Image 1: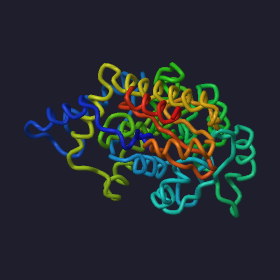
Image 2: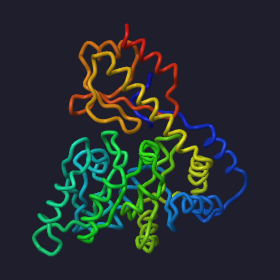
Image 3: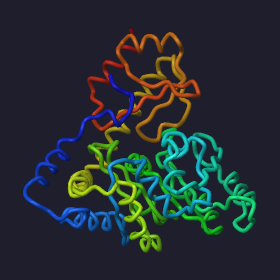
Length: 340
């Protein structure tokens, strides 16, 4: 029973098959290949907009590169205190921006409180020489507590940020999980909600290592700068066709949404099994494939003795993560461990 992370999950067979197909013969390097062109066309169709595209192999690289073209070294990025860019990327955004500052904000369930964002925008003016000016806001969806922002909640953050001239970055490592949870179209939770750049992650949802930096609107004009930063930082892979092949297989026939739907359903069942036992209390709503609970110590020992793998979280809760490959057998084993 592995509920440690969706990054521990295996690769979907369709992705492996696509890699084998891409391995036939030669192709141009550095994203000039036909697969990468096809991927861009498919993403434009899915997002109902013209885009520019850069591919990487990790979410951290995608986030840091994307933010580096929005925030100068003397600027500031607003995010939630629980944001991955703040807690889990070892200063990569600061490194890639050349010293840009992160300002963590508060809000229940790892969602930025719109009132706190507006207050921060007033507290940190753009034109006062002694303070660091905000240049971007970063929003995770799903966020780090497994909760989803709907389009209205996103606009409550992006509209005041845009009024102050900030760029809008969305961390979409689990974007597919948010889409199926909210029954939304990709455009609704991206550029239509104010997003300038979306870091779309496939790695947690069936791929080996495939992430797309998707540029919308005016930010598309910064593609050349983004590519230069990607090359200079060592994140421009020469055989990008193999990243494109993964994402093409993942997106084709809505496989990405089917896999996210499976993961979300498994998480809902994990939450049900844990809470119905009486030994666990939900800490956050379960909007996607992550479950955060406070466990009775006896139940925690029982689960570990039964072979359940999960992480203890800094706030004292326990995190259970389902993936596309979480099986009925694992859920049955969890039920057995709970009911021993």
